[in-house]
Image (tube, rainbow, N blue to C red; front, top):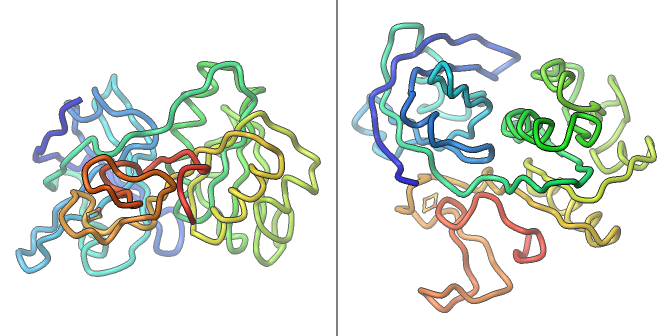
Length: 261
Ligand code: FES
């Protein structure tokens, strides 16, 4: 798959929750190649912020040729993107990263925490197509009742919620919710903050199930330029012969057994 850089037109942008935006871009060539779990890099128009910002794909509409990006404003770059409105343009590079493998015939947990939730939506769509919606269980964690995207999972998956403050669903984290609801699965996919991923990895080891984790929160430039994204791996890298992997190039999705979190 060849990544490409293009100038995309904004088709719409809305705010979903405090600091969370839903941006749709007309980017047919990238959408045509993209798979769930990949990301794109968005370029700021301000030349002083040269590094692009990696943002995961929340939706890939190949028919419309549209990408959907749901992101959190976390600095000057994403603040600039949040001001885009329909008709504006932005430079986009993608699709980047490896994406999630779609395992056939396996009942799966799709675990998303915070801004790790958006990539799970396109994965839920894809897995429900492959295995049927009854095989997909989305376990999503929010801080409080300010939820986003929750209803959009419902056509594709059984949805279970955990909140830090207990205002909705299980009080606690995503693993607490799985245990409280006595849910089981053959495999799991996860994206979210590092403490959540550590808990997910430990849970997968306890249950002896395969876990695919997306480390996108560790990314910085997204294009292999800053080395700000390395994670430790069990195997030595074939180029550098060190136990490192670059999240933006080798990932962002890894088999949890292969990396040290
Ligand atoms: Fe910069 Fe990976 S995010 S090298």
